Image (cartoon, rainbow, N blue to C red; front, side, top):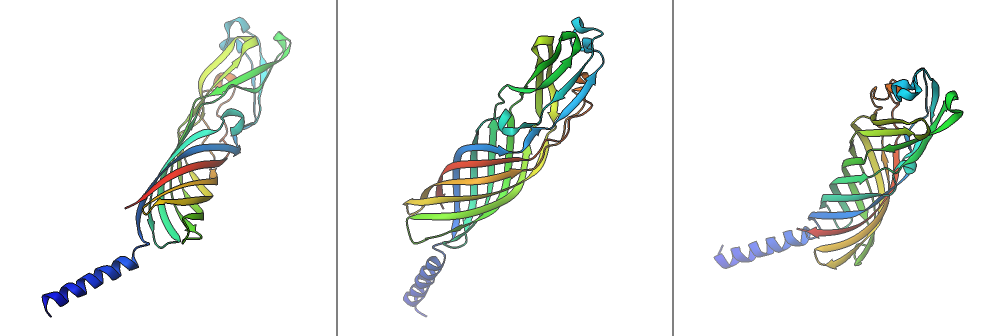
Length: 259
């Protein structure tokens, strides 16, 4: 075979391979937005009796009382949380994509009414206020996405993923202002690795041959967190119960590049 024929065959092979795999290849996506908690409890109902509140406030030496902590939802404590994701994926075809995603969610607690303290020496029920440490969660997931209307510049899609959430421990500060009692940095939940799973729907738009922008809305589940240790023993609580699951709605915008 002549050099010209070999070059022609090689060029044809490269063309055919490129045509066959034009819709395949790697891509990377950076996205950000907000993660809105909609369900689940960060604090379960708790109650206790304290025989001597003097351990918390010397002025109440010899005074006892009973404490009731109300069920508190994630929404009660934390608002809409910032969210960032980095995604590395592979387009198996125009429609089907597989990916691995690393996400980070964080938020600050607001002060909230955590329960009541029945202290007869102070006239009965006294409000207990709470404030938690920041919520910090890394999410590592794998998933897939199916894209519709692939010949158009504007493409709707559906996706789902599963993985693990690595949630930092949460500490609580409780105050009973009328009793002069402050319990600071008590361990509410321990550092936890929890199951997470999510679904999403979104739109992608081709702004260039290898660049897309997009937006999505989803639903994410993060499993319950492990209860804390004996840091609340001064309030008569040996250990806090496990926190409930966290259900949230992430809203994101994204920028993707194929390579």
